Image 1 (cartoon, rainbow, N blue to C red):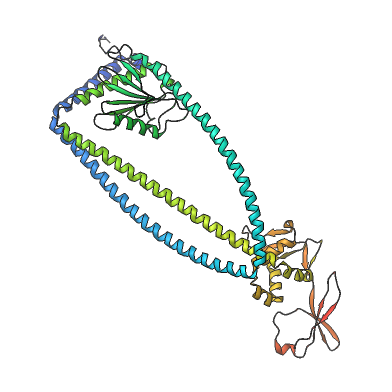
Image 2: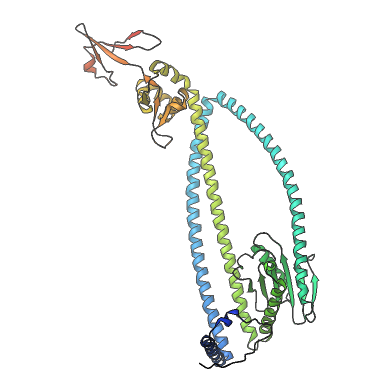
Length: 493
């Protein structure tokens, strides 16, 4: 197979991909054929479009985007309105419920205050003393933390200034690559607010440059800062945000990325400049790219005013959408904060109720002690008894006391926990308020001894007695425990 040798010419500053050396003659021919066809078709398409068609196409695309944005804004407004109405309704219901709870608790507290004024005063004094001691300790801790924080601020300020100076010096060294460019001059602006770190002056255009020497990603606020600085300097067409060692937030998908802030100003984001083998070469590539973009800015021949107006409206619309999204995020933050406050109020109310319940139980412990000593005895056997059985028996024997003192099963369970070791209590479920088994105790044996025809018959004590059944019988209640063997006789009529 005979071969043809073809001489091709390319710009001197471009590199030929190494993979071309691996192509076979057929693959080389196919590459040239396909590339030529694509380039030819592209030229035909571009040549076929008039300036009016290009303008109309851009205008149609912009109108569709604007309509889409308007629909999104209307939808977001409607959602926001519904959310606000729902939040108002929820908050009103919550507030009504909390106000009722507060009124109820206030009445209960007044009743407790009247009945237990001395006890409450004593407890308040104790708690006040503890709180004052705790506040004093917290004040000392706050003073110490404030002192440490001031020291850290001083150290951080020194460290930040040092890092900023290092980054500016590094970028200044890299900028020496432009010293052979016509009209080049670098001007230090880091001491002037709103001017960036440097202004790079070239014969064709000027550049506002800002170098960052961060250990983490360059945050969004730095992007907003350089954007505002560029807008203030209307005579500058380009701004370079250079991150020496890290990437830039939201613009890290490529080593070099671009963002137009309006029709004549563009921001160039350069990621990890110091990580490249030749950082100065990267800066030269960016300059040549900006040079080509500047030609586009300078060579607009069609109706510039109307097209500029469309683009400006688009940018303003995007800013409004960003502000609306920011407002929605703030609303969500306020909602979360309100939920947290409601939860804190609920927790405080529960804590107050628990404290009052515990205080009530402690104040009535003496009422339980006599009953416990008479009806419960300790045992070394592995016997268990259910807390509900003890509660049922106590309630049957002390109905008036339970009603007068408003004693509940939860109060009784709290009292049981004060009389036996915690190791003797076995929960029946994971719920802390459920019944539990108690090891190492048993109820004393009580029986009814029925005396009839000189015969002793044992029978269980009934909780409710039938009047007709009691008339002919005489019931003797016998009680035996380790303390006494006395027999109590009770005649029921």
